[in-house]
Image (cartoon, rainbow, N blue to C red):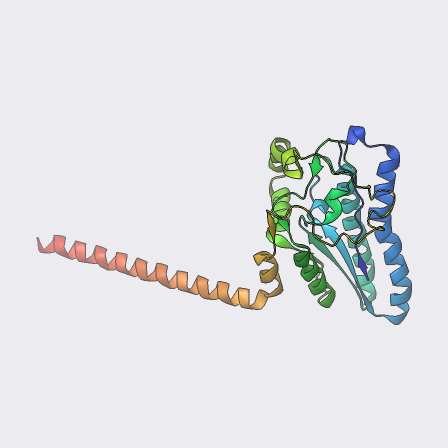
Length: 265
């Protein structure tokens, strides 16, 4: 079972109505909860199954203009952690993992309800949907790991938030609005907040932000190949230690020669 929903609204908190907040919460958060409960009713009696919750780096870091969505992703992370702690002591073979995605260039940003008068866009650098799909598929095949971070953007966002949250606040104050939107007018497309926006036609998986979309993530590759990466790291560390030791030996030898020359004088 893979949980992934994302209706959202792009606007300051002061302009978002209570009904819109409720709708985002019901779909983006409670959609995960109810879907997981349905899956567990089938999986627990069989003592088998995998649940992958598709999250976001915004489960750790709230950003301007997306308060409802960020709050829902924070809630999903808490729900995932609670469920995992309930399953672990029972010895259940039902596996639960979570994938924290970066910005992904999908058509979502074309039909996000926007009250800020600007075209929403994924915070750059955005990734091609194939990158997200590879991360989710790997998590489904290797679900015993507690959590996966996909893309360098997710890694940097989460670690920076953990290390210096106040600094990240200031960065978002300075650049958050610019990063999350463009000066282009919002397209006249139907909103997906209250109903599906692509019933009339298949709009595909790729969004409009092609210029800064990445099709490959070195961080994701390294995460999926930890043994060779560890081996390369160990070899690099060994080579560095040898080089430093050799330089130190040469330095000692040069000093000894200098002392000997001074004595001969």
